[in-house]
Length: 633
Ligand code: ADP
View 1 (spheres, rainbow, N blue to C red):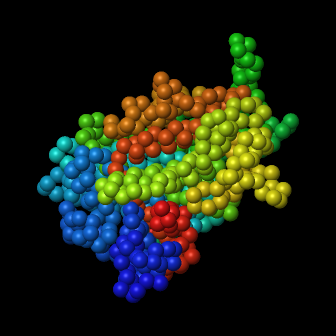
View 2: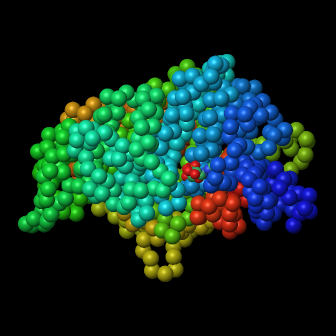
View 3: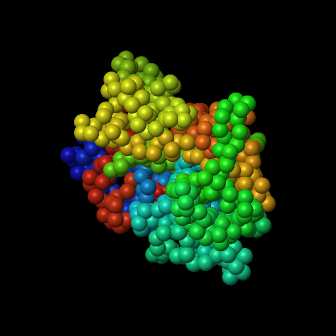
């Protein structure tokens, strides 16, 4: 315990007794009086209040303008202002790393950063077009990339890095967005109590009768891809749809482009209603032609070509010059997989197209500097941890290492300034072993996974055997004592995680039948045509902002998309792991060239209730998002 005079201090690092319990006690004391922001050394800890706390008004923002951090109470505005001043004073790009679990408040805090910067660095004379565009970026991203989960009615199902760009005078001049790993499996399936992406419901409930007629649309219950209830308490999809359209227009997506976008969204719903039966010799048959016809009409492709590509796609056989395309029959299950892969791919590409379009309108090629805001899912451990969770935890491992190295550098500089002799303990080394185990060539987990995807006979089992062979002596790796052939343990900075490797090879291949791609390439819908064009992958890989540390991303060396190759099955493969690792390396390079600021968002409880702080729940998050690790260092 600390003396009561330390109760509620603004920076936990000032506590004389500094450990898990005293930090929790301090946060609890502050939270009880609605002080949701607290520093802990280099971190700003933000605890979700689950209610409107009146601390974000323009008047309050004014209070933070130009103030030193120790002159004002901890706040996301204080960090934003500090980053802005540092950028101006040191001519150095800045970044704000906002992490936390789903529902912890990352998106809300990201929005507050943008709101603050638009206010203090906007042009004089009120809110101009650019400031409006900045504010409207998020509603567009949210309509297409957010969904209701059991924990959060408006959960971002992707990571994002928003760069706010400035001219030489320090005025905001543009913005660019980069997105990471949209959870596209949500398009075809959701857990009970969860929803698909908001835009599906907005369209079905908000479109006019005529629009609905044109898009052949019905009520949400009519669609297989929208399995569960569409309702969210206190949520109005009709109003949200109106806002989405206005926001899209602000961000450069004209009403005629919007019509094309909505046709694609509607087409995906019809595609999901395509049912297959099992015919003679196990061959898939079409149960309802109408769904395919509707899909074809909205995707603007030939219905017969689409039907054929769904039921009897051609595959490549033979090798070298003897290669030829032969028509094959899919089974019912394979046809269903192929349909779902198409829905996911179309939606993912549509999302990237929207981001791309906003970048075209908002990003400035001649910006002098930027503040980048990274809003990405934090480290988490679930009962079943899948491939996607490994990607998220790996990202956090790298961000934690980035933090360790940065803190280390600052300490080193201070000690040198004060001429203190000190002993070298590099905490970054800890994470390096785990990072190497996951991604270092040639035997990192992600590398072995890619290799298995290249082999026609690669399976989850052969993948596991190879991993175990190469890593069994690593202190960061373990296999369960019980017979669980699909699982391994990995030691991360925040704890040991048990991963389940079922379907990893398939998930990494993310296959889409070549004939479906060919069919979509002939679309008369401008957007479908564009997103299945050969240029599109390379385009979306590239950072739209000129301030990137490289002129071309490692994912697109020589204009060729790495990780894209063809498998023997005739499906077009985009290796997810490879692409993601390249994106992440690029992100780390950009972050490495900035002065970083760290925000850690915390859920007070899992009931979405205000005024309730659950100790163990908060402590676990303090560990997962590195706050306790920061204190240890
Ligand atoms: P995340 O992006 O981390 O998944 P969100 O930012 O979407 O989480 O926050 C989830 C919900 O919690 C929000 O919709 C909002 O209701 C509430 N919330 C989060 N932060 C705040 C805040 N600072 N003030 C008021 N409500 C908040």
